[in-house]
Length: 305
Image (cartoon, rainbow, N blue to C red; front, side, top):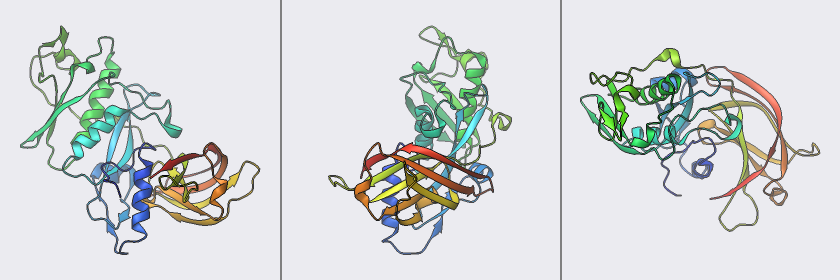
């Protein structure tokens, strides 16, 4: 199995999830609860269990496109504790515009923005970003959402007392004629930490489906399983997968790793091709009791692992 750095990235690394689920079926049955930040438990409840003891659950706060100045919490998992802040910030910079979340999250980071470094000293975490982040036309709401998303995402990790931001190594003064202090919200007069504002956080919506994705071995002609991926760990009350005409696909259905997907082991795998229209009838509840149900039609994705 390939190295898993970031597992749940809203459909961008679904191969990693199913690879881990595949290993789970052949590994010892002993389950260990995933280590979760307080922020994760606040918005998404108790973390799921896994047969790996080094997994971590946390939250990334993406700026909202629907309510400027607000941020939306989204759950993520990683096996990489040593670089967990780097993993979180990279995903934050990458944005969230996939699956059923298209158009709901705003991307305030200018194209080309890079992480130049993340350091921690005595609980003070300093993020150094490249100068591309300085968008001259960014308004106050955009800047506030950007700063809140960084501060909230990084402040949740154990041992973090303050979060500070630098641009090309500066907290004040100018970079290529642009005022860093103005962008960081303190006029460049003093070096102040970013202040996480919980009031900026929107409550998570009810759970929803991200995608329907079939997995197959590299080079194989037929799929092994069909995954209905959700945006968070859920308890599945009802799930039915049918073709465009309403005929159910036969096979065994079970939960995947982290309870993030329903997995169908199809009786007739040759039926599943990329682009196949499939209908899903579903009813789920997340770990804090938010329930959702619906019927939707999806174009089947097929990925190799």
